[in-house]
Image (cartoon, rainbow, N blue to C red; front, side, top):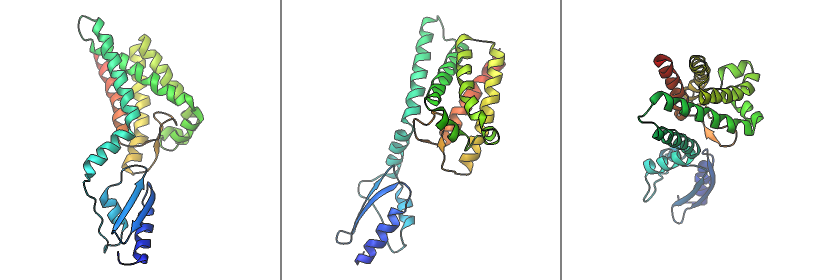
Length: 227
């Protein structure tokens, strides 16, 4: 940067990048200090600048920062899975041997009960978010409200081992319908908040949501075939 006009151009360009909250630029030091809500790759910042400007960072690793950013973003859902996984594995400690069917049933119960709980904290906000991507809720908005209660009932059904065939079949149907909208959103690269934990946590829609729904479908199918 050779003049104040350069400073202004660089500052304006960097400020327009998504998730950038503040930019300080100094032509004297040839430096820019960028404050952001979450990690932004250097390549993305470079793309925002005119080709005559080159941006670099000392002691910086995009791979490390992206990993940190990923774990920070998905910390709530990772902790929930760890808690459910840990508790359900501990429940197997009272058995003489590991019962895979029982473990999957307990895991599914924990999953649906916990996730429905977060949706119930602000049912209206969850419904407004869910309608944005779910294929059924887009046509029938009322389904977004019903869905939270369906999750709750499925959680109870798995917990008390109510009619395993009906419970697992219902889970496969409901979760398959849900994952279709998630697939469409991720493939179209739409920036939409995931409603899996209601409106309490700001989780972006991503492959994590696909894995989450896919795991529930896989477990239900496994239990159906084993029955």
